[in-house]
Image (cartoon, rainbow, N blue to C red):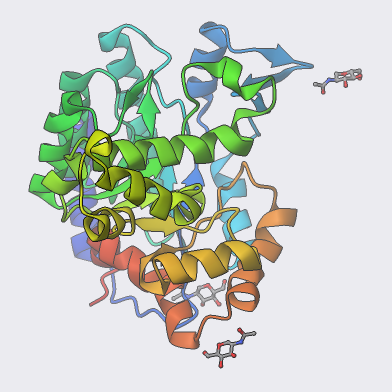
Length: 351
Ligand SMILES: *[C@@H]1O[C@H](CO)[C@@H](O)[C@H](O)[C@H]1NC(C)=O
Ligand SMILES: *[C@@H]1O[C@H](CO)[C@@H](O)[C@H](O)[C@H]1NC(C)=O
Ligand SMILES: *[C@@H]1O[C@H](CO)[C@@H](O)[C@H](O)[C@H]1NC(C)=O
């Protein structure tokens, strides 16, 4: 604790004392969806019994790729990404049932994320890993990340061991986020009933479906309505929300669906930001453009889970498949991300 605090003080000084004004051009690109994969996290998963096949660790039916800070930065260079926010993908530390152990691992990982950002302060920001579903521990970690380490924002998951966004248990988290105006990045997770995946990799369709489930729950429980000002990003084009929103809003008008006025539901469902990781086809972008528009879209790469061979054409496809204007591309490339995470602008000393 003492060490981390003194490190944080050093950070304050290094930014305040040495940063020079950093102008950004219209081609600047901020990636809000990229992952660090620290060894301690992999080791904890291995200890918890996650499967290893042919020497490769698997999570949710997909291989966990190799990661290093250096390859992260060099991939950003290859893709023309100026700034990335680092988060830990699902399941975070929710596979650790003991609250103290989960918090301890989350703290270690958050301090690593902090170190990565300190090694590259103009390239990397961090999103806090919370030891959910342990609420008290998660609130403390959120406070530590945002107030002491000055992280750019907070990472959440669509569910943590079946505790979905929208659940009233999460109110203290939402209050703490709201109080700080913190930007939130929600990564999809597998539903706990993994048999629905039929043995296929869960990220393929269960992640997008879980995004729909979380957004639906936030609407129907009224949690989103209680925190309308929080800037929240959902991944991968909002799962299937652009396609299903009118169905959800239609059922929600009925008495058994909650009796919420159609326009109110639609406004809430479209009141988030969606990142474009693996959502760059002409069909997806047409739906996103008409459902939420360029002011609500942010760039996401999903490094290192999406191979560069897919990420690179995906980035090009945003413009060509989306037919966005130059000014819309500026919003998608960096302006919207700066609105969600004003601390990135502070770290870069812009504005
Ligand atoms: C593991 O290795 C064996 C032999 O090289 C190969 O047949 C099999 O497909 C591999 N399995 C996976 C999941 O990569
Ligand atoms: C952003 O990245 C691009 C491509 O790598 C580079 O040309 C440009 O100079 C960078 N901008 C800043 C402000 O660092
Ligand atoms: C692209 O958008 C412009 C307006 O910005 C429009 O005139 C043009 O028809 C669009 N092209 C396609 C292929 O949709």
